[in-house]
Image: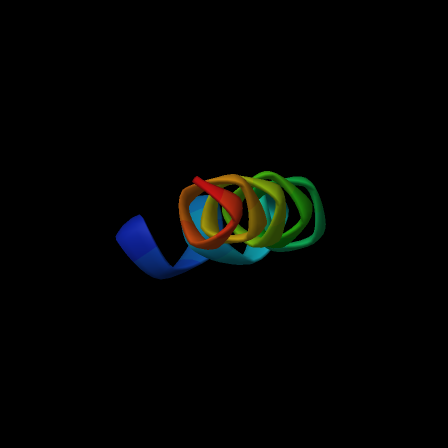
Length: 27
């Protein structure tokens, strides 16, 4: 169940995570 959810939101989540990391590094 958790794997499926992670796989489903893998693309969208990765993009958000990368943006958040970039913002944190930028600050």
